[in-house]
Image (tube, rainbow, N blue to C red; front, side, top):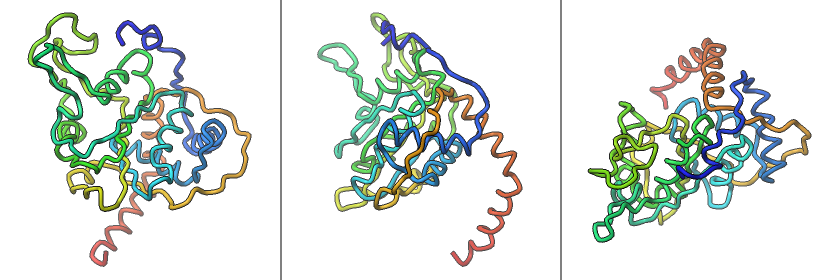
Length: 267
């Protein structure tokens, strides 16, 4: 990837102010027009709100309702990338997620997940929002194989995630001291989850660090719209829009929290 001309070209990314209301509607029309995926405006707004809340999303619902398609269509509309990593039932620790050192061939066997995480930090994507989908995340226990990132998402100390004990040969450009990779600030993790006999329940440790979203059991009808396409906004532009929304809706948030707190005993 260090020698890939496309990944080393940052392209055009906008830092302009974003109005989240019109942005959500532009996303809806762009996603439907370019990816042929229909999503309710409320679902897109909730997904956007989740980006502001947490960097780990859990999308739950029946199989075939568009859990994986939502982040893919969202990323395509934003002119960025969405990598899909298929979780396996046998995953038990961090080596299943990141890869492992092959002692026979004296090389590191990197996983699809690690390649996606590295790609997110390349000049092409480092200023854009980047999504990594963990498809069927609860086929195995994320509190085990995803534990390093659960800790980073709760308290990111800025230190690199160590992958090898020492560096030999040409180290990757984004590795610190040739042995580790920082968690990029522009990455959001999307875990899809089916609820059936083949899957496991998420522990509170995962739920407490995630934005939970349940998609409707059937795809909605979306009227044809001729809205303008979404511009390639940067991840900083999104963060600024989220910060502005927090200020604008501060009083409304207080009222909602008071209402929920008042109902907490009954609930």
